[in-house]
Figure (cartoon, rainbow, N blue to C red):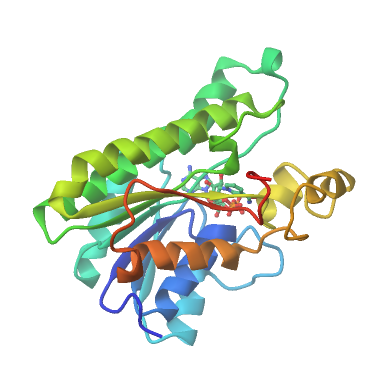
Length: 257
Ligand code: NAD
């Protein structure tokens, strides 16, 4: 269908997992897409085409890859600038993130900075680069990927939870500041989604420990990247026109039950 007809999206971390699903769903709904990532190929072993290749060959829309480490604000700015080729950014998805399990007392300053630079600084300056364009233009939407770990604390994940909690309040603050200029800013809080992040970085999906997690999910399954992409389409489209400064939890019921 055409829920995002005429839009131009910039999606950080768009080469793999949730970001990739968002890129594909957005293109299917009529948006041109800038895929901004540190790698062009997917982390997912069963994907042998890049996100842009799939969009160009299977949808009517255009897509390009921009080499972008979100922890460098000049690169997120370059990704937003690249969207000018498609008429300028209307939706910024700050999705790039890293996930690590750790014992709190073992976390080094370097590890802390590395994670914060991607999850928090990357989201902050990605939003800033997009906001600059949107405020000067016709407005737009910003979607930040937080997590259920941005709603609740969790033993063994202090840095990650701190980063995702920061993304949540950043989102609310930007909604307050940018709303009057026609920019809606929302956060998505995924539960456990089947991506390389949860199969490789912190093995949960398909791992033995996963069974325990699954008992806490009323829907009885882990999420697919497409579950999160559907939420992003809703927030980016006119269906979400009165949704602003919201935390949209998409977790099969895990958090509130
Ligand atoms: P993923 O690891 O499968 O994909 C992440 C993508 O981001 C990769 O293509 C990677 O190359 C890219 N990336 C990593 N660092 C980057 C950087 N510095 N600059 C640009 N790109 C970078 O992860 P995912 O599961 O798709 O997660 C996407 C987002 O959703 C993250 O913010 C994550 O924290 C959040 N999230 C995921 C889950 C889950 O269960 N998978 C749950 C809650 C929140």
